[in-house]
Image 1 (cartoon, each protein chain N blue to C red):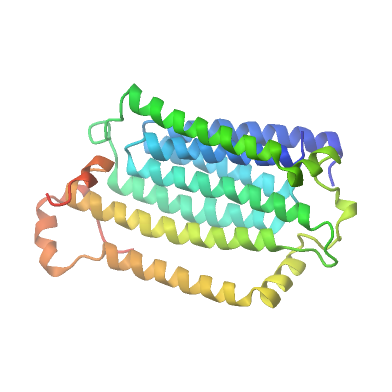
Image 2 (cartoon, rainbow over the protein chains, first blue to last red; image 1 turned 90 degrees about the vertical axis):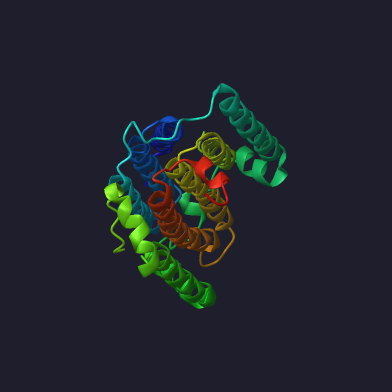
Length: 197
Length: 106
C-alpha cells in the first residue's frame, strides 16, 4: 500500500506518460515507432490498473497486450516492411484540422458530461477513490476475481472462448492462399507474404 | 488529483486522441493501433467505476474488472482479424493506404 502522496505522484506521472505516448502513437509517420510508443502506453495503462487495485488485470494487460497483441502488430509490420517509399502520404492540414476539431468536440462533450454528473462528483468531493481500508480486503485478489468470474459470469466466459475461436478461424481463412489466386499473387511477390499464420 | 473524475478525464482524453488517430491517419496499421488506444481508454474508465462500486459490496464486486477482461478478449480477436485483413489488402494492392479501399473493383 502506497502512501497517499506517493500514490498521487505515481498517478500524475503515469497519466502524463499515457497522454504523451498516445499522442506520439497517432502522430508518428513510421508505424514501427507508433507500435513502440503504443507498448509504452499499454504499460502505463497496466500501472493504472494496479493503482486501481486490479493487479490481475494489470498483469493480463502486460501479457495479452504487450506480449501477444503488440508482437502480432510488430510481426505484421516487419512482414510488410513499410519503407519511406510505400508509406501512404498523409492528408493535408485541412484534413488533420478537421479530425482534431471532431476529437476536441468529443472531448468537450465528455468533459461536460463528467463535470455535470452528480454520481461522479460525489466521489470528487468525498476525497476521491475510496481507500483500501473501506472496501473488502479480498477486492482485486485473483481468488475473489476468479470466484466471481466462474460463479456469476460463466456463460460470458464460455461465449468469449467461442469468440476467440472465431477470431482464429477468421484469421486463418482470410490469409489462406487459394489455388486460383496463388498465381496472381506470385507475380507480385516482393512483399514475401507467407500465409502460415 | 487521484479521484474518480480525474481518471475519467484521463480516459476521455485518451479516447479522443484515439479518435483523432482513426480520423486523421491514412495508414491502416496506425488506424488499428488508434483503435487499441480507444479500447484501452474505455478499460481505464471501466476499472475505475468497478473500483468505486466495490465500496458497498460484501465480497467485493468485480463487474468492472470482468467487463475489462472481456474487452481484452475482444481486442485480441479484433487485432487478429484486422491484421489479417491488412495482409490481404497488402497482398492485393501492395499498399497500406486506406484510400485504396475507396475503389470497390480495381
